[in-house]
Image (spheres, rainbow, N blue to C red):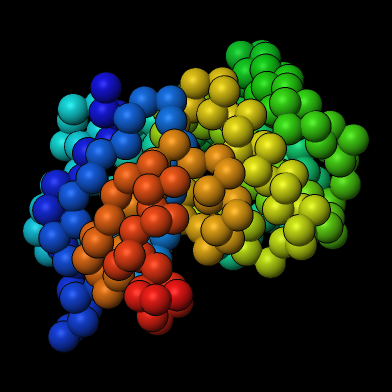
Length: 254
């Protein structure tokens, strides 16, 4: 069953057709990767799905419901969470506090309850802290809970970002270049964490340049070039696709 469906989505920036009539679907509880050279339209596609920018035409369906045109916070409430290519943790806050922020969209206490620190607010805050600790434990970074998040190693920051994204209890997790800036050991750890997330029943759609990571963990791959989809298949078939090889290596004979 498809959890996410992209139907003939288009996005132009002036004369640039960044995403050109792209369609594909993402099956439940799978890992799907979107790959392509720089400027292929990958991050633009993510921004369209998550509501950061509007499409010129086309539709996005999540759980058979149209979400194109909704604001990012509305799409998040439907069960879609994302990370960004550049890590965006809150400075001056611990890893635990950063993850707790991710829980608050699901919280019920409003401004007045928080201002007057009502007993219901204390209870909810206690539950949020417990949930955040459980997520840190899931990703094997509990020992980092009370360390200032932006002082952590890059790979550890990425794990905290994953935990924060999971705090909103998403059904679909969008990962924008999760291995960007990581060394080979950190990349292997990110691959392990993504697989662990998928094994919990969360569907993952990722944009990534690291082909080893993509081929190791993906169930299916979509290839974009100059905004168009040129291939969609399982990893072994993508590795043998002549058009994909030409785009990456510049020569069919390669």
